[in-house]
Length: 193
Image (cartoon, rainbow, N blue to C red; front, side, top):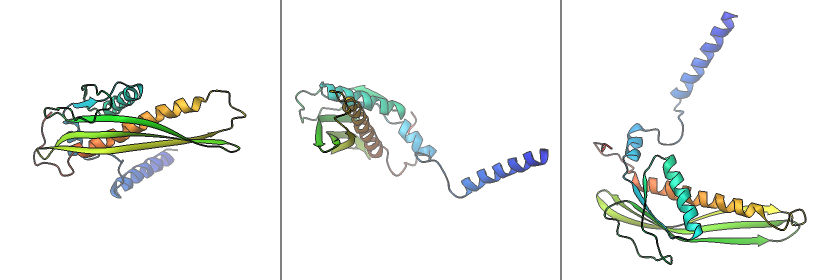
């Protein structure tokens, strides 16, 4: 019995060392210096409108930043989806405006619905010591099918898909911000938080 246990332990150790020896590693920011750079980013100002869609995406974006342990602060509220850039005073800023949801229906035996959400995003941040403004339109989509003969008068899937689209937009904004804010080459001396 002990011989079998020793053999299993030896096999486990051999498997673990062979995985690390072949270059296997988990995805993400595995480099500790890069992780320190991410954690040293200053608080990011979030600028949104006050429509229900804006509030939903803003809350989802705050959640994404919290998962990445990045601080956020609320910025001024946009009015009428204004395209005017806010004065950031050197603070990194994400401005999201013009959030739109479009629904496409393809009717047949089953109804297929494709929901597309888009938003115009402006990133204002410092890159190599100089202010930089990057504008981007983000679009996410989901589709689903249902049989109108078997479904009640309301469509509960549509509300759930909307929540997922808010989360998807927020995730894409957070990923793009992180890619823009963290330099691809590390400085000689990392800033201390």
